[in-house]
Amino acid sequence: AIITDSNCYYQGEQIYFVCMLAANTKDEHSRALFELSYMFSDRIFRNKLFKVRSEKEAASLIKLYYKKWKDNMKKEFFKKEYIKTNIDATNPESAIRAVGVLMEDNGLVKSTYTDAMVEIFNEHGPYIVIAPGLAMPHARPECGVNKVGACVVSLSNPINFGNKDNDPVKMLI
Image 1 (cartoon, rainbow, N blue to C red):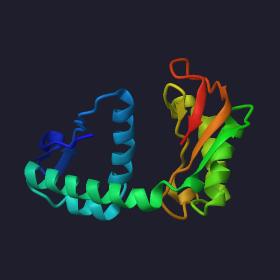
Image 2: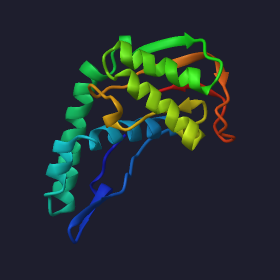
Image 3: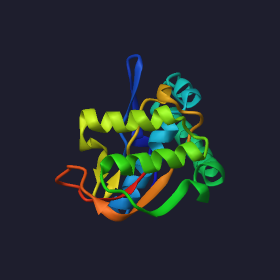
């Protein structure tokens, strides 16, 4: 994915972002958006970004942080311990709990975070199914996040979450 200078513009007291990602495939585009969402969740990055006064300055900052983020993620974010394949799950809740327990086992979250992910799914439905076969359960950081990270779970048998466009789910992040 390529970040271009047209990704952001300044107006009044706010900077607006438009993700303009040049990607060859839908999968590359989804991966880049996932990576950028974590980068933009960094408070230090956001504070610096809100102080810039031009598109060029904002684009330079985004490019710099994106490179630093990607380099760091190669070392810390995607560890083999964060991936589990062929997990047996019989329903959305057991699938969500499987990825939550993996996060707990790796010290990323407390059990309250896993419970919150299940509760959010039960309250708000299958909006977490973001692409064909892919669900991204989540909760608020204050629900029990210890450190930034993500785990990936593939299911031995796909499960319907109730999203007519993207079911069945085979992988959870």
